[in-house]
Length: 306
Image (cartoon, rainbow, N blue to C red; front, side, top):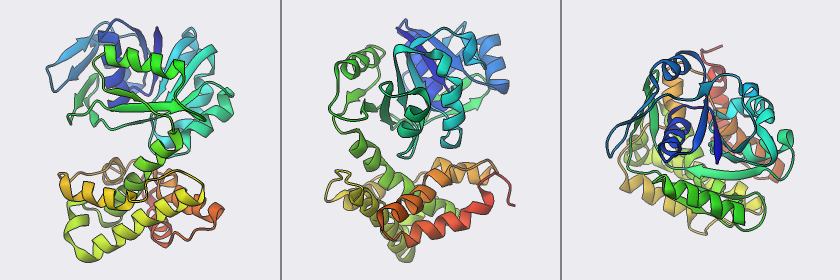
């Protein structure tokens, strides 16, 4: 089975390396110093169970130089989704599947609108992995958890077959029968955590520790859930409480949106709080907290403040 990793950063690079270690033909699509290091020295993974290296690493910055593959893992930032979907078209054959593993809830539809129907699987991952230096990726948590399913309908044969491939690569893969519910369940917590921590420039520990901030965060959770339900997403009745329980039970983290904001990088906020605002308008659901978050972060959306 041939794989292409579109966006070989922390998440994509880690999954691709595990698949390559398991004997799969994996092409990493990367750029800049990271690509150069991979071509020169291979891809080094600092894993929780011991380091390993993929060398030589098959890597390029031009997908058109590759033949069609069986599976594309789409791991780019949300703002690069449309452009990346255009670039991977030479990789998509009649039976190719493209698994979107990005944040937010809109990537599968964006990808499908460009590459055509029938290829896209929506997915979610819970791993934390980062590029620590060019050509080197470190896994930061104990999870290798990845879930994915069809855009409409229950998990198909191709979903189960791909799950088996991931499991053979020692990854915790699971099929899902309701992809919209999967994406929105993650999105409720992700959008609220990312938006609030970026607004206050503090990690999630402050969200639970300050009563006024916690009240605003709880409102942000409720807004995302309300929009999802208005759009007929099958969210758990207690999803908001589950998110608060997660906040109380887990160590403080800095979501990637806050990390990018502090580094002066381009932001995904338009597909997080911005998406809550936009989809809320579509569904007729007020989203005052996320609208305020989006408004406050828009000057930084392109990186440096306008």
